[in-house]
View 1: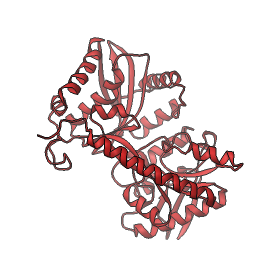
View 2: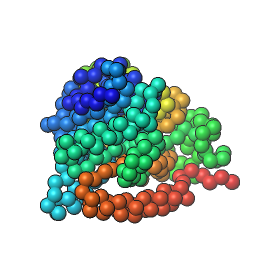
View 3: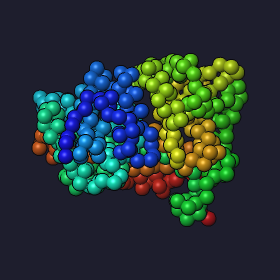
Length: 390
């Protein structure tokens, strides 16, 4: 078995890399990751130096990890700033660290990629060994695997990695009130059918928010990636920067990054445009696969009442119902999503820290944090936004 460390995906044929990526979220595809690298959104200058691990057998690519050497903790959505601060106060360097993740993308999925006809568990162990060896070679303080699928979580837990539990809010196209509303429940017929699942008070609030947008003369149109011109991307980038500046946030995508995304994988892109007459006053970017919609970025020219909810939640939910998508993941954080029909869903990461004392302290913290997460999710479950069963 040959193990290589790559400074970028340009060294790998797209078809060879994509053969390791299962159907599902499009963020692991060569087109997405290489587009970030080629546009400069990801790279040493951005604090995301690619150190992708690949395994070859007989010259054939059989396994890989999207891996980055980080000089900060921005763009990860699994927050370890307190760990870095503790290292600094102890006179130690937390950076560089190694992170197995999709940059700027809090969407769960495989991080230990393997050919479908290969021994997945054996290759997972080989990839984990290679990642730990690279951490030693690079002098990294730690190794982190973010937003893991179940198989990755189990493989890393078996190797002694510390597991960290988080949560997001996801919408499901299944009518509650029949059994547990899980798989097999009926999908919504239309947006009114979705609203009927809420108690009257919440139903009225959502209708009022949608009405505020309509009364402002604004309608939201979801434009497929194939129909987007460079001017559409340039306008969305201005909206995105405007909103980030208003909140003092850091932009992760450049215009070049958005253009690469639209050029390389237009079939996976939807751009919501909030149009007031002929003028676009806000927008939101989504990616999609055969089953789900994924919300990523939002931007606006100003403060329009309820427009964020309409552009980022209600219009996309309506699109999911109309097109038969099963799930809508609207991004990280945000309890305001819960009262609008998004239910709490656990997320997982796995962590290795070189320093034994800090590893012990983090393990203790994670035990307490996991108990808190379990109580929090139980509390949310007891106060679900939908009407209770008779």
